[in-house]
Length: 197
Image: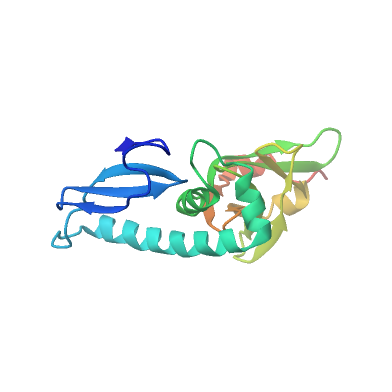
């Protein structure tokens, strides 16, 4: 892909050249690209899914640049010809990632900390915990971000934790995308967390 300056020979032109090249304008600068292939290609299932995801990403990006709050959010990340629209598309296509879930004893208290490490290209807006008890019931807890880092913490009593068999963590990003990760508590791990008598 060749790029030109504003005063270059391509300045002000756009469109195709002999079904081989296309001149596009990006941020006021001309860009020379290879002409896209025809629609006779047979797409794989993964390609079809990605094309559908990209379609929804462009719909989200169009909404984001027309919403003053979302536009201001993405404008702070603009750089080198990558505008808010491009950033919104990339944000929609990349879900947040949960790298770890662990449980630690809280200092000096009969409580534990459920710690979730979650990251995203831009921002993780919230982390929700589903505590699935051995009886099958589910209780929801909201984790709090620790000092504007990628660490999210939820405080829980040892008595309450002793009834939990599975912890599900859901991390949400600015677009509303979310990622789910499960942590199964083994019987040996659970026995260490029985409430003190």
